[in-house]
Image 1: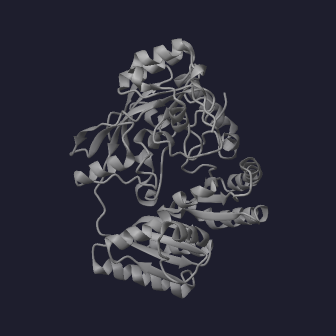
Image 2: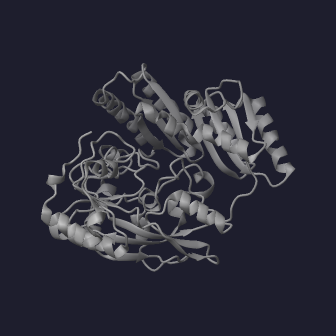
Length: 471
């Protein structure tokens, strides 16, 4: 794997960066450039000129001032678990890695808020909340390595969105260093604040193109109690939606996920897990709900029997312990890690929940026609209208040819997304991989306004340039 050599950064620039953070905090060795210059995508070759690890907000501001003076492109870097190349540095940029901004402090038990540095790992915040008897509900497979700053910059979603919403819903305050070098302290933990525009919401999901998130005040919640998990075998996607409607009409669900039979086969074969039951189905739905009384479990079983009678469910299992609930969750949560060995081409698409059956039928028809020789893995957060389409690369097929074939079909898929008024990126962001498709989800007027906002926050164009759109 090629990386930018040390000689591509001038001694003057190197010295200026070192003056901000110290000599040992500026990395130019090949291993560091490759490690910090990429995310979970493998399409672009990482090629940053340097990696800088600031240890304070003041150091971040100093680095931005250096970048402004020398017209250096900056790429903010968190846990680098992104799937749209939003944190990839492939054009000689300077990577600002926020790992050292990892303090958790100023816990407020009355407001149920806590202040986090941008480098706090998601699981670290979840563990802190649990220690206080509280709960941070935004959760996903990469929670053990993703960072809060990255979660905010991509408005991360995950497996609890149906009940708890996206990262956006849990950001009570935000500090960001803009492309002008200014430090903005936004909202400051207020529940009600209608004093003008809420600039915090512009920063959330902006993928570091407006500024670098350095600190956040995060909201916490009451932890759910006695969570019970059910996995149901479902014959087709239309039946999945019937199951969702049935359960949502009767119970408050914490999660409603789905995955295909092929996804289950891959996870069972490569993670040492057991099938939930012997019956083979086209798809599987995973439901999670709080069980406070036996009556609630009885209600769930009555709903299960109703769905079986209707032909929407062919088999099912319910967790009897915390360990079994965790094992059932792994059938869904381990999919991304399992299929990563095939370097999948991913489409993270969404529409309104009511349109999902027709939407998926059209997408599946196009994909099956275009990829008769490829393995297709489906999974996602069907309870919020978000599905993940994963095309697995055959081992014998060169990456360039694989990407080219998948890119052609993506346009057909995104035309379907557009007809159903959906999104080409439900939760992974746009980054480099999807910027050519942005117009399928956003109007030309919207994109023009986005570019104007970018100019206000980052007039010199130094913040994560080339991501989301080109100026």
